[in-house]
Image 1 (cartoon, helix red, strand yellow):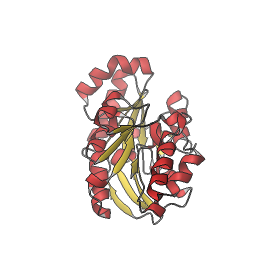
Image 2 (cartoon, one colour):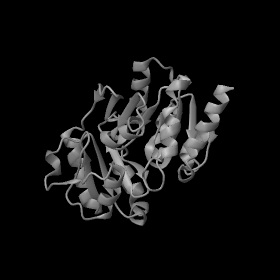
Image 3 (cartoon, rainbow, N blue to C red):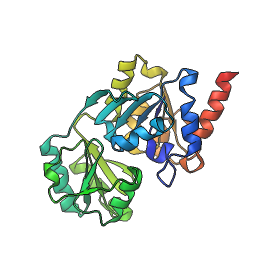
Image 4 (cartoon, helix red, strand yellow):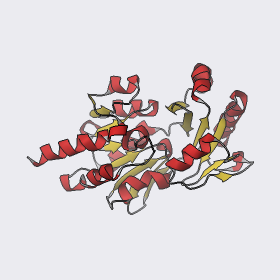
Length: 259
């Protein structure tokens, strides 16, 4: 069973509620292996499972790295080629966007003095972004570019035409990882490693970068707050993240499994 975090497990405050963590912790007792699959850096991606001592798997940085938890065994790690990093940074400069580079666990930006830093630090357990004037020298597992929502609305078609691999994961952010290192091949690789048929996998998501991997599994579920293209590939639409939609669904699902 696989879960996106932002907009799915996490609420509007970017935190995963105690209620949601508690019900996810019950999954192994029901014979279900939990997987978090997220654009967050590895440290924050591990939290929903590790905070309640739940064994499982973590796909972080939009598919750029995956580990088993609690062993921390690395299943794969796919850094972005320097030429792609340069292309994203040049595009950010051209369109007046703020770029952030994700390492395995740390986040790097030219400045911490903007709204993008506040949002990303909140989603990364409030660890401060590392300010650097040389983002091109950082080994990137993932990159995000930020701008005001109305500005991104105006330039989205131009961004996608120039760089189709940039997904608008949140209203104020585009993100990308190494070529081929997105959520779909990542979830398929993890499922293959643990011997689970994708047709037997249930997954939850809300954003553009969730469409392809949800379409590749047997039981895709969209949040009530999800984009229309996510709902279009889903078998089921549940409550929104602001109402602990995943927790509500799992509580009912596990109660039915106990009958």
